[in-house]
Image (tube, rainbow, N blue to C red):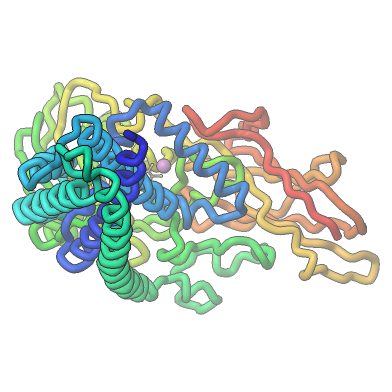
Length: 544
Ligand SMILES: Nc1nc2c(c(=O)[nH]1)N[C@H]1C(S)=C(S)[C@@H](COP(=O)(O)O)O[C@H]1N2
Ligand SMILES: [Mo]
């Protein structure tokens, strides 16, 4: 008996939650309103213990590697799909439970029941939305919309329940006849319900998707002016190594990453949007002169610095695509600290971000390295939204996890506070661990000399800010042979290497390792990314 209620409830829950999602998605595209499935997902990933989150991310990445999809491009899409599916499944479960309870209690829900049901889910979700403090949402409007939508959803669920479950109480003599009439009515009702909810879902999600694609195109087009176009040898090239004789092997990744291909990592399902015109940076706490700086103040009142920077993510595995290089421009934190007149007892900067991220930077480190900067431009343009507009920090030799984007505040403090990922058991220092990667065994770029045929093998090596003095390649477990090194764009970027291997037919195993500037070899022992960054040798198989 109860099973009919649960089955019908699950179906109705799904049928009514799908258009709810569709409409929320449309409203998000049209008016920038909050999208509950993403907010719920973001909130869950924030409150869950770090190990559980890491396990989930690992599982997702393993699945992607298994399916052969590019992790850097697809991870966020995977999360978004998971968030929407989770929400839909939630709707199915709630529908099943609601119908099940109504049936077990032999009661017919009315409008009030529906409103209560809607509020039961709408209000906590509104609470989550407030707790997340999404920088880009319109708070009041958001709440009215979200709660209103859930109330309608609750009432619709309750109406459908009243319509689809047998009415109570019932007179026994009429039962048989009533049943067959009901069954026909039920089927018709479900068909109508299915058709109308499908229409709303498809229209909402479809129009939303078209708008989303247009927006993405517009943003991408803005990024097309990348300096990457200038990499061919002009005399006024911005690239200092333009005349280096050691050239990247064809098939190697670009030395200067076009900004639109720069890897992206952020804690939320979506990047955080901050309005540059209202944005100001408060520098508060243990300072004699608290500051309130606009983007123009940062650009005009402090000397600017340019630096070619390779950024990488601690969660990457050996050979990861979560590493990219571009030109960073900003203000030295030493200059900013001098302006704010940091007091003697001050020990750390506590940096907060528009997406709820936070990190601590040791003032000792800032005093020791003038390169540490608040960055407002990438590739000669303002920071792209996805990469932290309007302001992010750069700390040489550290993984990305220590370097907040979308900065909204800096507080000077005297007691250490753990950062977002440190609280989740990632390393406190997060110094970049040296790595080298084979990008290509260029079978289609074989060099013919009179004596032999050489296959160029090429890739990158990166040690944060510690330099690379040697790269070695080994084929089929033979001796390690030195590769040629191309001058890097700066002392804080990856370096490109090439090795010309005497051609031999068959299947071969290529391995690479490197040595830091001061002679420290890359760690060959295999360690997973967590908690300090992965180590081990990159291996590439090729059949020639
Ligand atoms: N506010 C904020 N800053 C952040 C993060 C984040 O989620 N939120 N992620 C960090 C991590 S883990 C990395 S690897 C880099 C990635 O920067 P990118 O997306 O511009 O490549 O940003 C760092 N700064
Ligand atoms: Mo990261």
